Length: 173
Image (tube, rainbow, N blue to C red; front, side, top):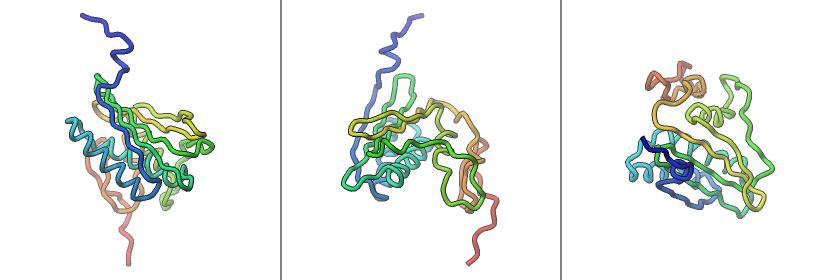
């Protein structure tokens, strides 16, 4: 049995980083690029794509400063732990996991979804008064059942038990 050094365990085997415009289009592109990169690396990407989508959306909605972009970084480690980082320009706006939201609320679930998929997540200070919100996804099942964080909108979602549909009645109209 061999002992691995801390450097061997924590050094990423694969690395991807890109700067994107702090717009809705940039957030969509972040998810698409993450999916493609992870697919190229031969890794499952469904959970990671959801986390990237939520973090990128938060960077655009809450971390945007006119004329400044956000950065997406993916680091895949030898143990197949994926670290996702999204860096934005608003270090003064530190995200916090909100209290449970009302069933009819249209916002407030993003970090709950991140927390449900990630084994760990947090926030670091970044250069130029920015912040980096990160999440780590380890191989295997998500640590939590995400069924309680999906919005009651009639859209399909995932839970630990597999695909599911929100039980709320579909909007009429």
